[in-house]
Image: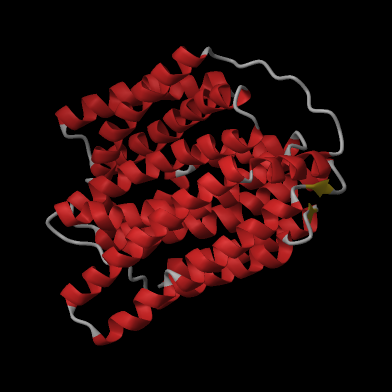
Length: 354
């Protein structure tokens, strides 16, 4: 499978370059860009996994989520540059429900088919539950409610203030989990596994992995810019709304690397890392990527407020609450995964017809 993604990247990126100069149709460019980004995301995933081998499961999950979200961040920045604020907000919504319902659901389902019951850190589950409630229900709902009585300038100011607080809390959370209380969470990992960890060998050296990450990021930036230029025509051609393009298409393409990694690890019964990727990525999107895009938009022609539509808010809140309820016992099985997947499909149908 790795060879397939490598071939896709080495063939797809040059074709995107050729298509941008030869002005190929939007449909052809849209397909080429999506496929190329998925291939590049897989390569980035392999590079981060190599770095994670020497860093441990928690740092590994963080690295995987970070570089997986880097792809979506790049796409969103170019979308903001093009003035497509609606697509950016929708893609953030798609990342939240995609990670919590689609990725976590598939991880539980596929892992549960091979292993009757899988365990993951109960302490991590409780820690993540609190942050999910804060990031989705508190920090996203407050702007929606308070902005009702504000003008555009007031809404942007409110969004900036909340964004700064969320970024600071996210950084503080990392410091808490990786530095001051590292032993507390490491002990939880050992308790949840209850078995010796196998020694893994990195696929690439540290220097090679970093170089590949840098080159892949540059390629993703170029391909993402071309992808954004196809959104308007593709939406008109297929009758897709900005909401559907952002929630489903951009979110899935932008997070392809971490999606694949989480599923593979779940099947290997490494559910701690799989959950860390899915839930950790959600928290990173909500508490860092979204606020960062609000601040980046201040340098763009159109500013982005941290205000979602009612449908987007309801979808994210529902996904967060369902995930909290299902994961608080520190165990998973295939039926719980199927429940999360069913919720994602229901929301997908709803966004398609909006």
